[in-house]
Image (cartoon, rainbow, N blue to C red; front, side, top):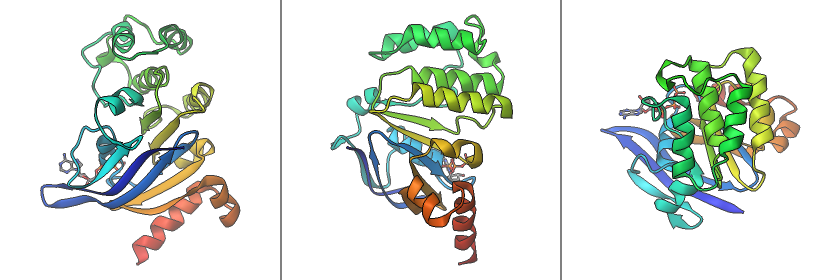
Length: 233
Ligand SMILES: Nc1ncnc2c1ncn2[C@@H]1O[C@H](COP(=O)(O)OP(=O)(O)OP(=O)(O)O)[C@@H](O)[C@H]1O
């Protein structure tokens, strides 16, 4: 089922065009890989999906309606630095207070499993521990869309596999998930669908299995080929 429609979306910062005529449909029950090199516009697109930025042109519809209170409740996303003033336990309680259906006990259980102290200040956590916290808090929400912006960029290679399993184990199959990343090789087994953006444009928007079969190679290699081809042109 179609849950999010991104229609003719463009975003300029001052006179610089960062996103240019983006058209994407997101369906429930699928995990989307949003792939792009540095500065391709991934975080800007995520900011727009979460109504934190205003489009220059075009629109985004959640369940056929403009973004607003409903989309805020049902799209789970934690912007960077939003918890910095809190201790870990406070950040969990804050989620319980603000988000209906938040799985408080599950969050505490996962924090204990990953040895994240409830007493620590969020601002003092290492980069990787902070990313684990963000992931746990986001996945424990009851939502229709989960948005993870570079969820593994600060996590060591040993913890990455664990966190990929954490995502798979806690993924609600009735929801959609959008994962932006440039660490493709380790994460790509999660993807049902792949969207590649470059210089603010969508270069590819396809089913992941169909792509793998058609091209007989990994999503990482397909990504490299698509970007290199674009650079040559
Ligand atoms: N608030 C802003 N003001 C001006 N330019 C901005 C702003 N936010 C982003 N940009 C520019 O928009 C472009 C896209 O940035 P964005 O953060 O969306 O890319 P990204 O794909 O998430 O990159 P990365 O992988 O490096 O995080 C960059 O050139 C960036 O400098």
